[in-house]
Image 1 (tube, rainbow, N blue to C red):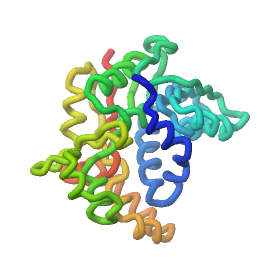
Image 2: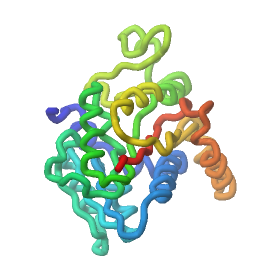
Image 3: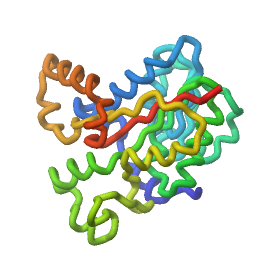
Image 4: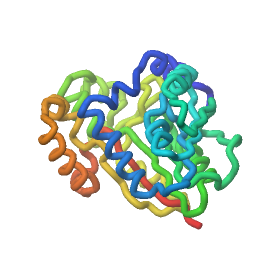
Length: 265
């Protein structure tokens, strides 16, 4: 896969750390970390593919884990290195999620694929990224893959905020006029999917799903209310979110989803 010029231009000026910093943005980070912490064990080796500026890599390295990171965009790598603290046992290299040949088979206990599937636009590339993540993971190891979910984004950015025109998306063929299923191209930056798309992608792999999670739930849709909460109210909101983020009847109402699966072996 050639480097997507739209992607490079976007991340050269985008602050990923700031996205996850406000209360509404922190829900996704806290939820993802909560699930990682269910499975990570002392001494585990971690690989983060598409690490961005390293929010997750640094968080885990600061807990004492050995972390290797791969990132496509040079600007993100520079920020990643600037954020590295002396005590961290961490590396970052430039690379592509579709080709992890620099990393041996079965090397990692925990593999994070929390960004690349946002920016891959056909099933072949998506499966190649998942295949590579599984290859470098030890038998019995756990992979965490994140997706951008179309319905949560349409509800929030489209119908609620008007940042995108849903009617124009339909006219342009980016949304099916009957089902509202989404279609994206590299210039659109983000690939929007639904749970059934993720299920179809995963159907060819010898892996066991452990969790499928609405990782930010309604937090973006309710961002003003969430950001206005005091500490006690936000803690209660998080308790609610953690209790409901795997409910089948709520899984589509989220802007991001986390698929957690174990490599057989």
